[in-house]
Image (cartoon, rainbow, N blue to C red):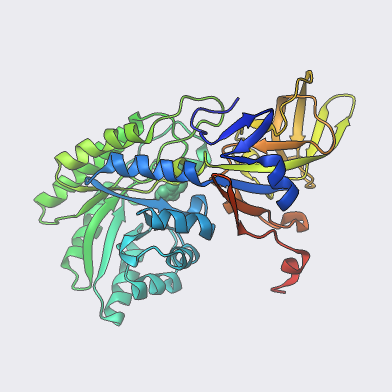
Length: 415
Ligand SMILES: Cc1ncc(COP(=O)(O)O)c(C=O)c1O
C-alpha cells in the first residue's frame, strides 16, 4: 500500500511511476540501487509549510535529513533557511545558496574549527548546548572582534513516543542544557559585548506521530522565553525544533498545517517569532529507493529476496528497526510470499524488510522502497566496498541526475 503522505508515486498501466516517469524506465537509464525524488512532492511540502507559517515565523530545513545539493538548492530557492549540525553541512548549505542570515547551527559538539567557520560566515545564530561551548564562542568572538548571535538549546525533559535513538529531549540525553542553565547562559550572553542572545530552541526527537509532545514543547519554550523577557533578555525567536513523523507503517500522517497550527499559537501569544527545523517530513515522502532482486533463495526455513541495495544504502531498517513500505515496480497478480528482503552485505543485520508479504518475486524484478527520502542517502556508506547509489530528481516527465553513481575509482581517490 502507498501511504497517504506519499503523493507522487502511483501505478499507471501496472507500472509504478514517480510523477510521469516510469520507474522501470529510470532503472534502464540509471541502474540500481537508485534514489529517486519527486520535485512536485518536495515543492508541495514546502508550500504547505510556508502557508501554514504565514508571517508567524521561519522554517530552516534540517540538512541532516538529506544533504544532496540538488535537494538543498530546491529548498533554498523555495524560501527555506537551513539548520546545520556540522562544518560540512554548513559548507554544503552555503554552496547550495542558503544565505548565512537564514542558517541556524545546532549540535552538541561543535569544534573550534567549526565555530570559527560559523563566526567568519556570520549566521542567523549558533545554538549553544553547553557552558564550555558558550565560553569558547565568546573567546572566539572577541578574537574576531565580531558580535555573534547565539541561541541556547534547552532540554525540556519531555519524553516522546519514538525510537530511543531519535528521542532527544529527555534528561538522560546529551542534548541541550537544563532550563536553569539556559537562563544563566543567556544572562551571560546578554552581559557580554561579543554575544547577542536572539533565541531559545529545543528538539524533542524525530519520527513523532502525535501532536501532544510538540504542544508541550511549544508551551514550555514560550513560557521560558516570557520569563527571560521579564529578566530583561528580549529574544527574537523560539525554535521548536524538528518536524512531525511520516507514515512508514500505515500510521495516519499528521498534516504539516496541523503541526504548525499546534505550535504557533503559544509562541505568537507570547510575542515571539516561531522557528522550526523540519527534515524528515519535507523530504521523506518525496524519495524512494529502487533496487533489483539479485537472487531469490529458499533455505527450507525462509524465503530470502536478495536485493542489490543493502544497509549501506538504507540504514534505517538496521539501525532503527524501521519498516519501510516496499512495492513491486511492475504490478503482479502472483500469489503472495513471506520474504526477508535482504541486502548483499556480510551482516545478518543487513535487511530492507523482514517477514514482508510481496507477490512472488523473481531474479531481475525491481522493488521500490518508499519513504526513503530522509535519512536514506544521507546515511549511506561505502561499507563492504559498496559504491554509493546515484540520485535523480523527477519533475513531471523530466529527469535530472543530481548525484552520479560512485565508481571503483572513488573508493581509492583519497588514499
Ligand atoms: C536539532 C535538530 N533539528 C531538527 C532535526 C530534524 O528532525 P526531523 O527530521 O524529525 O524533522 C533534528 C533531527 O533529529 C535535530 O537533531
